[in-house]
Length: 124
Image (cartoon, rainbow, N blue to C red):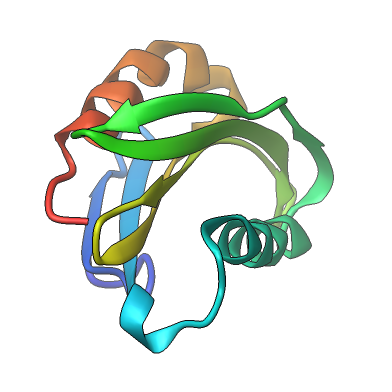
């Protein structure tokens, strides 16, 4: 899906199931931020677009051998209740941001699929 995000390296969606995903990659060479600083900035940008946001505690994990931090974010956008799975990856040469989301009522059914999609991302 080309219309999910202009800068996404990868964008997928199943509109009939209300499940979406984008992958954003930024080269470390172009940035003078640590992973934590970059993650705080990008997470803040996402939070700025969500009303009534509720952010989970961070979970540390590995995505294809790279350290990563993951959050679940619930909130409202354009009067729709949405739940996101936000994953920030500290890759060898890049920082990666994987954002999966669905309607809040569909999230529990989509969560395992979102985890599988996140783990399938390579080349960060």
